Image 1 (cartoon, each protein chain N blue to C red):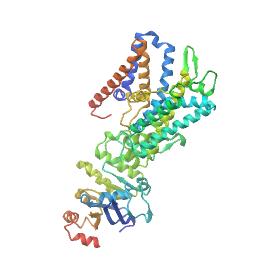
Image 2 (cartoon, rainbow over the protein chains, first blue to last red):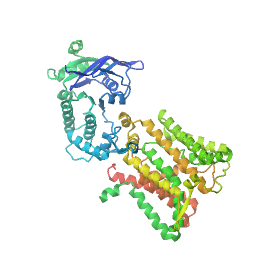
Image 3 (tube, rainbow over the protein chains, first blue to last red):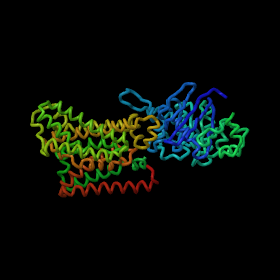
Image 4 (cartoon, one colour):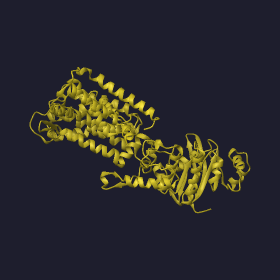
Length: 257
Length: 323
């Protein structure tokens, strides 16, 4: 495997008496796209929430680039270079594309105490980024998010992750509710992000989408990682489906691996 | 270009404001006299200061119902301190402003820390503050400034003549605060945060914006400007009544929403609020001039609010819910 970016060891998460994660180990390499699969309630989203700082883990360790980090909030995660793009993409619908892209990290122009945003710079960067994430239509950076389609919003969220040079981009069900063309757009972004040097965890219900872009597939069931080294090039969709539902012997083999 | 202009939220109230001037001046020539215009301005700014702060606060998704009480309480507190405690006017003023900032901080802290709707928190604060004002005065009005010049009273409620026009210094204060709040809302990073906080607090939080601190700052601003308005009013009218300012919070909210700021947060307009402030104050002044009994004032205000909201809803539907 390539050099390691993320290393999670012995992660447990309890919600009261319910254990949502059992001793989870997970690695993501540099420039690696990992698909995270599992049925509803398998623990995928809990794992992602822990990694993105949305909920604290009960015990375990997280290392980023070989350094142990404490992720207690989304701010900690962002500072560690972990960017999560949620289903609703966490944008402010009333604000413009440019204002959303720079929210929380607005460039300041002139005297500091005047707190004036450099709107020119923001719009200029936004225009470039929108082109880079493949929005062909000429959308002005001052357009409100509420006027964009679901796919375009997804692209804005991805553009933000790219601009701030996150090491790891987590895509939580990015292709849900998207049309065919928009889905292809998202999958293309994932490939481009890898080419640009980002790593990615890709979570999707649609196994076919995952198969199209990932280097490696991880399967979770019942709060445990049951397979973490499935190669999409040598494995069929049917085999993976059987691991997800727990009907396969391959699962035991892969977990022991 | 024209299409874009007509879609702006400020255009509706602006047309109404112009219509008011046309109708009132046609019905009563005295309406446009210099003394009346300066009168309108003097009354306007006190509610206007509170409306500016309320615009920022409502854009961030919160209300402050306690401003009417703070308006009355702060004047009472300052003059009681000055009359009974034997301290200088400046010290009494400083203490009063500090107390008002504390009230705002408490509003914001309770609202954000315990996630209680600000509607309820500030409703409670409204009663606490008004009750305190009545208690410390036994319900009697306080003596205020009795002549003589002081930089503070001159600065807040002084006036001078430009030709036949009496210009109140409080109007300069209002204009200054309007320009600053407009700048903050549209041009600064803080303005971006407060719009984000009102539009989608989860997204703002996820981007590292301190939602609680942003809101608390705005609650403090709201309280401080209400205190400043109350003190100014007490100097101008030479009266400090523990009951003054009752119901101002609703009139201020009306000014803000008529101007085009949305009730649910995320979008606000300072220009619209300034128009909304004048719209309601000119109405109050004008209907007296044309001979409508002052007691009927609320009928007109209510009609403006309802009419404005209906127009806006119809317009939004025609434009497919957007903009």
